[in-house]
Length: 134
Image (cartoon, rainbow, N blue to C red; front, side, top):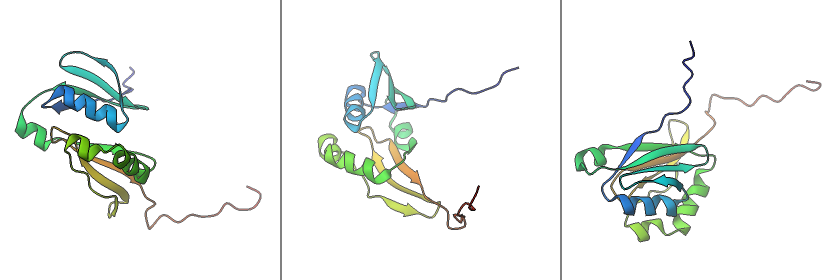
């Protein structure tokens, strides 16, 4: 019996499907496939399905978490792309969190909340130098 999971892809709601696709393309994602109400959206090895789904209560409660290697670079990239001005969205500033992550928030044009984060070393994790000869 093989129960190995290969991938999980959330269905991210979009109240304005075409505008949402433009937003994710501008943010640096790619859309290799799209129909009139569903799009495969990816960045590197991460992916999700964007769906034309306009239920305001659901959209405003939906959240995504994107773990990246360098959160400050992502923030700088989105600022340089003018993502807030172009799409009328809100974006927070990167800050260190007590859960050992540095992150910032970003709302997409539909109101989906993204937390873009990187892991930070935990204070209790000590870097122990390798012994000579190992």
